[in-house]
Amino acid sequence: MAFGTQDDADEVMNEINMTPLVDVMLVLLIIFIITVPVMKHSVNVDLPKAQNLPEETKPETVRLTVDADGKYHWNEFAITDEDLVRQLEAEAAKEPQPDLHIRGDKNVRYERVAQAMAAAQRAGVRKIGFVTDPQ
Figure (cartoon, rainbow, N blue to C red):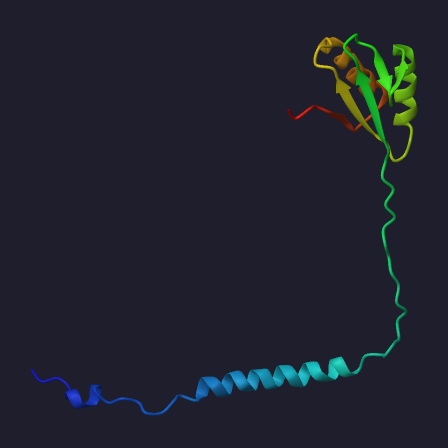
């Protein structure tokens, strides 16, 4: 059984097939012919330069301290439970609302800190944080 000769299969193409290259070049030429006139027909306008910097208004921080005896201190001033509620309601009405940082003594009963947190929640304070000693 004789199939084709080996000489036919061993031939190497010495030329590059130019057809795909020509196809790509024609497509690119058509794209440039369509897009260049569109870019040239724009109206030249000298736009003004403006800088827009956001105004940063940082809310103040309110420090509520609960000492070892269970007494409240509003920014280092001693206050009563009734004054605490009024102060929290006043701070909750401000815009932007200040951050409330609660600092509780390690020897105070948790109940006093929980009462302060509940009063802040009822007053509408949204940003409550705890200050601790990392040591």
